[in-house]
Image (cartoon, rainbow, N blue to C red):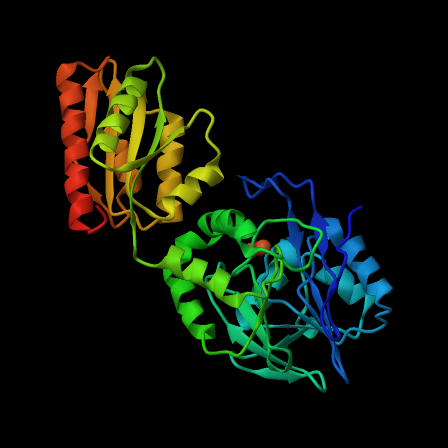
Length: 396
Ligand code: FEO
């Protein structure tokens, strides 16, 4: 087992979590570098607190880390969020340290009772802004709903200038170091994590960035991935990704059965590029869902390429439409291109899925069978309309 070379963040504050180097799928998304479940031990002069636990798969690693630190008692287990990758080991901790209480907010208490069958007497329930003293260290709790569950809260440790942010500002990224030497290394995995987990809650991301901006911290300790000592790097990334700004890009996920839709996609891509637009094309038969999610973070326009199966959209295109709907990117324009053999309601069914997005639907281009000259002209016209939209947005 590979372990972190250093586990002390600051005096009497330790990383005691688990690393899953081999995890390649988390909630259906690819995790190329596994993930970490970060748990932190804070030894105050009077009390000891554990910040979050680990996925139950890694509970023995957590207990070994506590043994190495010779931790004989834990007074508080701070539960920032009820999802089991952070809370799942709490029942085992309460069994091993029976004097410990779970400190959390009312929403998370309710979640933990449902998921882990904890009892009333296991909890100390705190209010937003409430503090708990560990003697020479203070834990201040900040409610941060919807990054990414309604129960999420953060903990600020003013004496050591650390903020523990749970999933917020995290990354699925395993490494042997507690801190990352060059934050640029985690730009892409952090963006992917943001796209998959935080993007649907973009307005809450903005609110919670605002909530912490005036706090005096130099270290951000999330519940996944490395600890950030360059606070501006990850915060500026989040500000950029969650802003209203869009880029001169068209995301073009497509699926083609017999080549008609693919012919349209290739023609349309060239037409867009001739108009000075960057195109990111994803063949849905082989595309990585996380890569597609990441591309959606900044793009001004999404055009789905879809062939018709029976009377509706190909299931892979329907899945892509559903993904766009639930990830709620800041996309301003949507359209559909594709083909059908003898009929169907492919466009209507895709639009029905996508209609909850605040995006303008530009007239789709659908060919009957293999695309003819007129269909290719219509694709050129669609590319021209998108160019105009991007010019109006000031991005072209
Ligand atoms: Fe990493 Fe929402 O759990």
